[in-house]
Image (cartoon, rainbow, N blue to C red):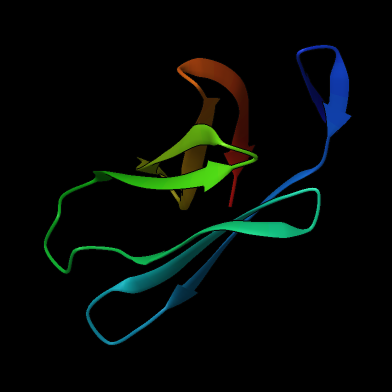
Length: 88
């Protein structure tokens, strides 16, 4: 649970692997805000955009590899304000 403008928000990011790309979904309070596919050879960091209640939402997904583990960090911005960083 995170907060934006004093109100609590539930953020959920999901990535579904495909053959060459991934389906990226971001939900705010159970509302689908971003539903895009990643670029097949887009590098370790990609940006996805959507709109929630008239506000611009940006999710910046970055692949992280450390020794024996790998994961994706998703920075979520609403109208340019970093709201939360999620880990997938």
